[in-house]
Structures are given as C-alpha cells and as structure tokens.
Length: 236
Ligand SMILES: Nc1ncnc2c1ncn2[C@@H]1O[C@H](COP(=O)(O)OP(=O)(O)OP(=O)(O)O)[C@@H](O)[C@H]1O
Image: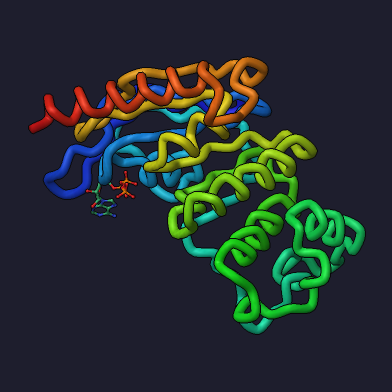
C-alpha cells in the first residue's frame, strides 16, 4: 500500500462533498474512479496529492513523487513535443524522451509545436510527459474527456503500454464507464453527494482481455450502470 485515505470528510462552504471515504492505493495498480458529476472525484485526487486538506480523516502516505494529468493537455505552446516531454529536466534524457515519443506513436513529430498536432496527439504528448519522471503515482483527471470514442480506446492502449513498462500506480477519474472497465485493475463506484463508495470491483485482467466485446467486461459494465442509476434515483 502506498497511500491510504481513511474516514475522509470534506466540505466546501455549505456543501458536504466527501463523507467517510476510505481508499487504499496499492503499488502497480490502476484504480478508476467513476461517479456522478460533482460527487468529488477531483477533490479525491487533490487530497491524495496534498493540494487540499480533508476536514476529518487520515491520510497515510509514503509518496515521494506524484504526477498529474488533466483534461486539458497543458503543453507549453512555444515548446516542441520533445521539449514539452522533459520540460523541467535540465539534463534531458534523450534516450528516454525518444522511447516515450515512440511509445505514444509521435515519431516524426518530436520537433512539432502543439498547435500543429491534433487533440489526441497533444494528449498523448502530455501523457508521455507524465511518464518521463517515473512518479510513484499518477493522478489522471478525465484526461480523455474531450476526445471522441475511437480516440479514447486508442489512448487507453497507449496508456496501458506506458504503464506496463513503468508500473506507476494510477488513479484515473472518469465519467465514462467503458474507459473505467477497459483500463482499471480496480473500479471504484462513488455515490451522489455526500459521497462514499458504493462498490469496488477488482477486475481480472486475464478474463477481461481489456476488450469491450468480452462478456465478463459487458456484465461488469452493466452492473456499474445499474448501481449508478439506482443511486441516482435514490438521490432524487
Ligand atoms: N475549492 C472549492 N470551493 C468550493 N466548492 C468546491 C471547491 N472545489 C470543489 N467544489 C465543489 O465540490 C463539489 C465536488 O467537486 P469536484 O470537482 O471534486 O467533483 P467531480 O466529481 O470531480 O465533478 P465533475 O464530475 O463535474 O468533474 C462540486 O459541487 C464543486 O462545485
């Protein structure tokens, strides 16, 4: 276990957001967090990274390095793909940068500026950047939200390839259940506010084959949809 959230409460002004939330993050796992809009998914990432403090509860964490990937790519427009990947490293590791560029299929674009790339390519560059530093944990806040369906599936493949090599733990927040079941080794389903965990699914990657046409994945996906819709109806 590299980080543990225990009995976390968080309130903003008059809004109770997190309510006695428990979450363990283990080495080398990909946790996908799904839940209704505004239930506090980004807040959980901000608490893990230390950007915000909970009002109550404990955080037990041995993390030295945390990486963040956001919905927008946050590339510097006046830097090339190559320069963006190792942006804050003075001693640029050329081999590593080129390997990452290759892993995300941006060969030939290393000297291109972000405005010459498609949305998917820019996001691949920002994911390559996130893996440059071998962070212990990568927090990803709906990084594929603005991409169309085929690109999302494509991005998941690139992400799994990078994760396979680095084995950083990933906490990935998404609205998209397909994304969660394809990518996660664990899917955590959140309730409406005040938010706690409705159910956790440990995904057998060998059974799932990370394919949406696989029966095991289809059943899991349907179960998550049911849980979320029952919770939504109860909240109304
Ligand atoms: N700094 C803040 N001050 C006041 N309210 C906040 C603050 N940060 C978040 N909130 C509120 O807390 C709730 C949870 O926000 P959060 O962004 O964590 O939810 P989310 O599940 O990530 O949302 P979405 O799915 O829409 O991205 C929202 O109602 C939001 O408006």
